[in-house]
Image (cartoon, rainbow, N blue to C red):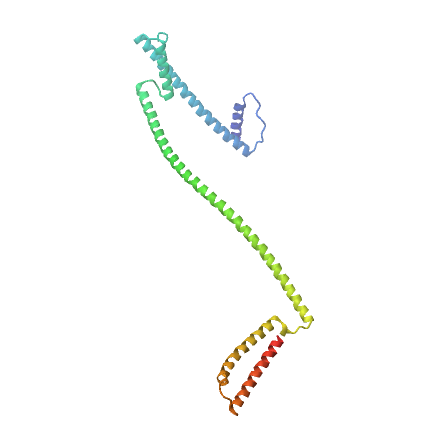
Length: 273
């Protein structure tokens, strides 16, 4: 624990430099967190130092190579940076810029060709990916068109359904109003019937004078009339015969009594009606 505290104090002193280290509560948790931070910071600082050393070494190599190229050009060819024409200087600058863009180590053909080949491959892959994306986009546009058509049809169906529901709702409301009217009218008629029945009962009306009783009597009269017809037809053969003193008188009396009874019954029914 003491070793970690010393390590943390040393790291904090290095981080803040001349500034005072802020006060913090010294406990196991804070010391552990600060110790882990110090370890991570030192690891990053170590990696950064190694990267700086590598860059310095590469810069020294580039400087040595630049000096070597300058010596070769100056001693072998007799060329120097000041003796180059503007066009040559522009070409060299373009070559250097191309090398930097391609990320090659030097400007030799052996470095340029792989870099150009890599760019060409990347371009082909990009074109292939672009064609694939175009096909997918075309398919998406086709599906989008079909979806829009389906959406429009669904919207039309929804509008038709809404209009139909509005009409059906109006009809249902009208039917409800009619039902309410019929129910009220039925209730009113029922009350009137009950009042009429109560009024008739208070007046001690004979049930035989009701419409139903009269209709029944009329039906009975009609039935009796139908019964008279065959009797009259039965008497017709005797109307042409010469009367005999005994048999004719008996038959006539029987027919008269039967006819008188029927007429009496018929007159009673008619008078009662």
